[in-house]
Length: 128
Image 1 (cartoon, rainbow, N blue to C red):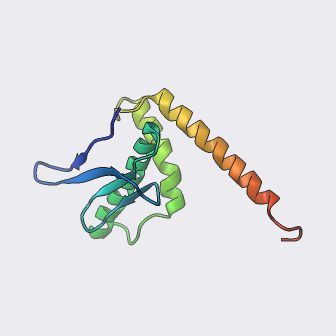
Image 2 (tube, rainbow, N blue to C red; image 1 turned 135 degrees about the vertical axis):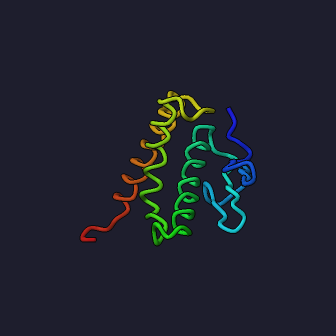
């Protein structure tokens, strides 16, 4: 189930969503409005990345409207996107990925993060 190739805000305004080789998982270009998603991600991951980048886009709109002064902390966006996506999918408001696929992806991410954290602790010197 593919992610959209563009996001339409109105009949006159839309911006592209592209999948390509990237160093990071995704990127929102403030100048062009393009959202880029790393193409080697699993389908569920692409949906999480898309929503993550849409949250950055939303923050830019709010900044331009002088509602907020700056982008939210990256940790907030990174943690809010999968939780929000789970709710949207569960409610039937986001299509293209199933709740089961998303839960499985998030479980794998949690396990990977826990392993990385554990490895990081093992590399610290005593007294640090």
